[in-house]
Structures are given as C-alpha cells and as structure tokens.
Amino acid sequence: MQTKIHYHPGDSALIEAVSVLRAGGLVAFPTETVYGLGANGLDREAAKKVYAAKGRPSDNPLILHLYSPEQAERYAYTCPLYYKLALAFMPGPLTVILKKKPIVPNEVTGGLQTVALRVPSHPVARALLEKCDFPVAAPSANISGKPSPTTVGHVIDDMDGKIDMILDGGECSVGVESTIVMIDGDDLSLLRPGAVTPEMLAPFAARVLIDPSLERPLAGNEKPLAPGMKYKHYAPRADVRLLKGDEERVASYMMRYKRCPYVGLMTDEAHYHALRSKRTVCYGKDAKDEAHSLFACLRAFDGMPKVGTVYAPLPSKDGIGLAVYNRLAKAAGFTVIDVTGFAER
Ligand code: TXA
Ligand code: MG
Image 1 (cartoon, helix red, strand yellow):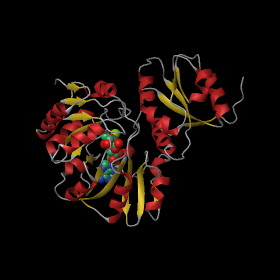
Image 2 (tube, protein in one colour):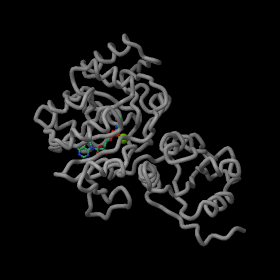
Image 3 (tube, rainbow, N blue to C red):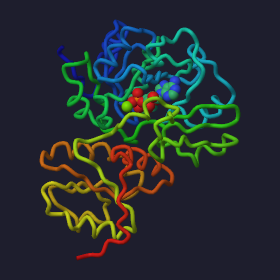
Image 4 (tube, rainbow, N blue to C red):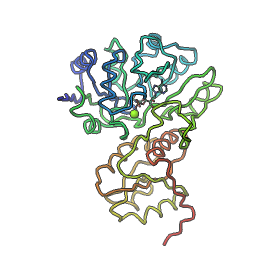
C-alpha cells in the first residue's frame, strides 16, 4: 500500500483524511502526547485493520478520540465527576474510562464493557476531529512493543506502506501517552501515569488509587486494570538497566562505560558533558523534558547496532516523573541495579 504523507496539513488535506477514515481507512495523526493511528471508531472492520497494522493483540482496547467532552454522551454513560475532570483537563492529555453504550463495537473495546475517551489538544488533531461525525479510535502509531512515536519520522519508520495516510504535526509536546483514569464512585484509579499527575487529580477525588502494575512487576495471577499495561512495551532493541543511587554515584558508574561500544547511556543535562560519547543520549534537564524526549532517546539506541545494553538513572516518581519512571521501568522489565555500594576504580 502506498502511504500518503501530508506535511503541514491544511484544510484540503484534513478533508481528504476524513474521507479516508469514513471509508474505513487508517490515518496517523499528531496529538500533544504521541502520534495516534486513527480509524473510524464505530467501524469494526477499520478497528481490525488497526490491530493488524500494529501487530497488536486484539484484547488490548483502543481509545476513542472526541472533539469535545460532551460527545461522550453518545458513546458512554457519563457522571458528574467526568464533567469535573473534563472542565479541568480537556482538551488535554487525560483519558477517562466509562461504561460503554452499545453503539461502540466490541472490536474497539477488546470485548470490555467500558470505553476509553479522550479529547486531545493538538491543533491538527482538533481540526481533524472537528470535521469527523464519528469518534476516532486511535492507539499510539507504533508497531506493538516499540516506543510510541513522537515525531512524524517515527511514524514513517513504523507505518509506511501499512496505512493510507500520515498527517504531520511536528514534535509532540508532552512526549508520553495520556494519563488514564477509571472513575469508581468518588474515587479515581490511575491506570497509566502521564502529564496529568496524581497530584493534579487529587483535588477531584476522595482517593486516587495507583494501579500496582505501574510501579512493580505483577505476579502471575495479577492483572493490570488497563489490558495494554501487561505487555512489555516501550522497549528498544537493547536491554535497558536502571541505576539506583545518588546522582554522582550513578554518573560515575556510567563513566566506566563511556567508551564501551556495546553500552548506551541516557543522562540528564547536568552530566551530559562528562558522559558525552557517540552512544550517550541527553534527555533533558527536568522530568518534563525527560517525558518529552524519552521515546526519541529509546529509539535513538535502535540506530546504534552494536549497543546491547542501555544504562539510565532510575527516575524520581514525583509529578510527571511517575510517567517517565513507569515507561522506563517497563522498558527495563523492572531491572534496577543499586549502585550505592559501587566504589570508583
Ligand atoms: O496519549 C494517548 O493516549 C495516545 C494518543 C494517540 O491519544 N494513545 C494511546 O493509545 O496511548 P494506546 O492504544 O497505545 O494505549 C491505550 C491504553 C492501553 O493500555 C489500553 O489497554 C488502555 O488504554 N485502555 C483502552 N481502553 C480501555 C478500557 N476500556 N479499560 C481499560 N484500559 C483501557
Ligand atoms: Mg501504545
């Protein structure tokens, strides 16, 4: 299949994209979090194509993207807490899970009786959704298991030849996927951490319950609330190892590998100068920056054929740090090396 790419899409490109979607085709588009792989969310056959293009297991449900929070009424049973969250965080990087209405096909929800809804804020996503008279089902536009795409180049790498169209919208500003919450009475369960942090959600709920799968590997009999969180995601080709200890210890541990052709290093701005090499990637100065460039960094190591191991500092879990921690810990299969006792040689 020939994939049509629209750089800087204007009105006519967007109208073309809507007709592709309406006809059951697939269109990748930018959001503020990551690029999405869009399909008509009411079309079962189109949903099946999404799973095929990504190589995604069909029990892993898709998020419906809407232009406005009120459109949720057509697809789900809403509640006052939904509207409080909508007022505070939509359009923006928050996904809410609600009980679904029959109009939403089971192929979209992976057979679940609930549906995930999100109102993205990226201008291209908004312009596209405004023109659609259906919801757009969209997972991240990566091959299943690879880091989510945050640039049009990443989407082209994974989806060229497999989908009808790609809309460019520059680099995604947030860089990690949306926060996912499920409403349970007055409580909120956090299923996936993102830029809307537990601290930001706390004023709206009696309790914000953190799904254990976000912070530790699950035992054989445990299941995460979001089916997608059980898969080893976000993984580059190399093995990722997280280093725990104070900053200077971690940096001096990494220093040993600076010239090793088989090891990649991920570091912050403060230590980049000392650790700089062809295999060292800088992911910014603070947690927000880290979130923004995390997936691009992980993909950069895929372009270094000899690198078999990547070392990165264990991120803090504060604020958006929890989202970075969760993605990196999953990329690392939760492998953490404590370097506290490490003495410099
Ligand atoms: O930022 C985002 O959310 C991006 C952009 C494109 O909007 N989309 C995204 O979709 O990350 P995806 O499919 O890669 O991740 C959706 C996650 C999966 O972990 C899935 O299991 C979970 O949402 N999910 C979807 N519907 C659900 C439901 N009804 N109940 C529980 N989890 C659900
Ligand atoms: Mg994904």
